[in-house]
Image (cartoon, rainbow, N blue to C red; front, side, top):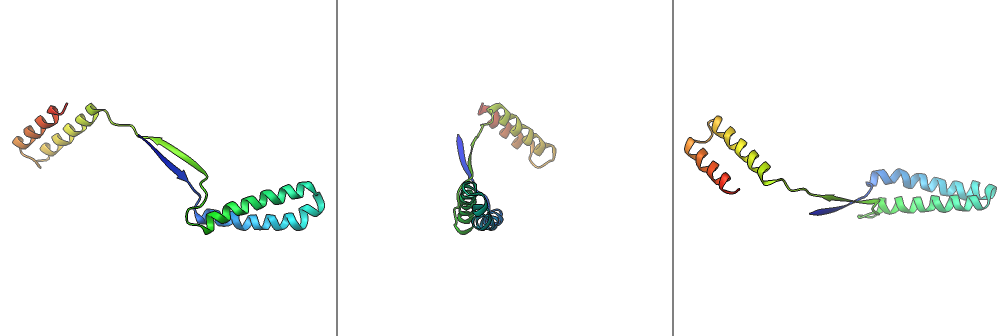
Length: 114
């Protein structure tokens, strides 16, 4: 079975990006565009996009996901699970937490499930 998770930055991660984005937009408008022309426009647009992205993540509940992670759950093999269950049962018996009769009964139940 596959599970899908979306990865979003936290508000505290996005806040510095938002502030720096505003600084770069202002820098672009007042310094880069007047001195560099077309490059300044591109600079300011990119800074604006970064500011908007981080602003949405700071001021909204959901935010914009940065990516998606898909995980695949692997099921344990029945014999591995059986071995673990038998080892736990034996430990309970060794520690004196269950009687010999309870141990044998539960052991038979586990082995009958195979």
